Amino acid sequence: DAGVTQSPTHLIKTRGQQVTLRCSPKSGHDTVSWYQQALGQGPQFIFQYYEEEERQRGNFPDRFSGHQFPNYSSELNVNALLLGDSALYLCASSDRTGGPYNEQFFGPGTRLTVL
Amino acid sequence: KNEVEQSPQNLTAQEGEFITINCSYSVGISALHWLQQHPGGGIVSLFMLSSGKKKHGRLIATINIQEKHSSLHITASHPRDSAVYICAVMDRDDKIIFGKGTRLHILP
Image 1 (cartoon, each protein chain N blue to C red):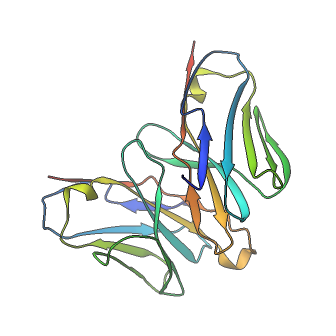
Image 2 (cartoon, each protein chain N blue to C red; image 1 turned 120 degrees about the vertical axis):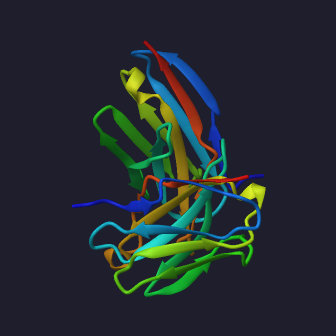
């Protein structure tokens, strides 16, 4: 049973470019959440997708957008990259039908460097 | 003030020592997670708890809902326990709020 997978593992972009990160949830999970973790900090919640819709959003600008596909996989898109967007981007999946306390399983992350 | 505070921020101990990491939070929660993050970034969920105490091997997690406090204990610590330990709470809207983590270094 594959856990949460993310691609790519590392990515280098320049300011102003756009980037797409991908996440495949753990088998049987239907909810995907995205987090940004700056160096030396705890992760910050970006948004959560369920049933192909953005259900919740953290304090991130509209440059950050996402998508969830019918197979529950998800993409995170960041437009007009800034140096401050350099971070580890983590994806986590959970099973919304499992009850109110949805344990999240994390992927290995994508490390984005913006030059 | 952060909604989730962890202490200490950094901890260095000798192999075999009993380790305690504390987490205090200021919001209403439905559950609390303890996570382990090794260098390179991968996060592993250690515990999710909403009351009482859970134990897994040498790891013990406790939570006091009234005091809004949780602790993670490691017994007989080992150098392979060296990692960042993150406390994260799930608020009433099912959003997760993370602490900044405690960097643990166990010396052989």
